Image (cartoon, rainbow, N blue to C red):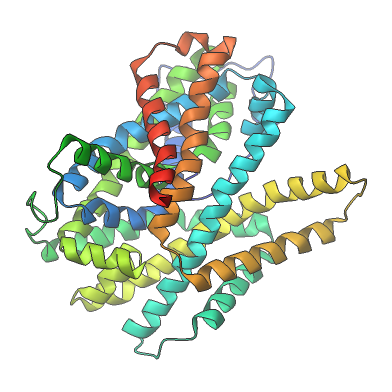
Length: 439
């Protein structure tokens, strides 16, 4: 899921119709379609959206326009391709890992798990930094306190998040899921509240150094792809989504029904996110956005510090804190599940059957120490997205489905489509962007 969360909906055999039950009419829009459209909508909008306006606006009007043009097709066609890959599999009920095992074998499944682990683990590190910066900024700018020692603040925050998980992962996921729609409502509230602050400084192609050559324009597109892929990613929920449609409408109608629901969901997602992005960017100047990037803050924290609005000054950082906390906890669940399997497998390879308590302790110590160290060193959040998170997500969301469509006989009918070329190009450029960001 999105840059946003690693929470999963669980599909079980109980959800499938019995032999004497009929599938729903796929030509009609049913109540379940609304439920899934809203579930995808809520999952697709996460804390990653809080960093999108900074990259969107820091490059001036052209960058903002390019993100507006590319956001919907990148989100729609990449997740559609992933849905197609999964729906044709007989092992989709085991999640995407089962699908890959069926298509490419056990070794490929192991490699995928490693890539998937690092894709969500790097997001966990990023949110550790974001949470520390959000809290520190709030204490200094809104509460007018002295800036706390970063080493102590980051450790307290990371330990606090881990303590929350002691209430139980299932309870934590449910609580975090309940916060999804209040978070979306708060984004709309902030976006509307910012309208009186709009200015015209962004509405000039010369507001920031604008590329003057074809290479310059290409580089601009290249550098904004990782944040687009990251901000709208919700790939972990696609397996459950596809399996539910197969069980409800039958395999013949699954592809068309998935497309219909995803289209409705992504129109809503695009509308809400881009309204928030445009409203945030129009409330600031390009120099403000460049400063926000330099200060390593989310757009909400920067808005709270820079605008003369008591309401936004209090509401924005609290919303950012809740959003980042929600996403951290959701991604921790995903990290824990994958890392647990990896630790147990590593133990068995050495002839040891590790106890559950030992496995849990190893994971907790690893997560606490690495998240604490990363939050303390304060690396660039957008830099992490450009160099690690965006490319890793793109390899799963864009390149993997395209490779499967070209190699797996069951997916042959999806070959030769223009959208495949688009998704492949986006995936390749996003992965290569990591090299550009590092060098």
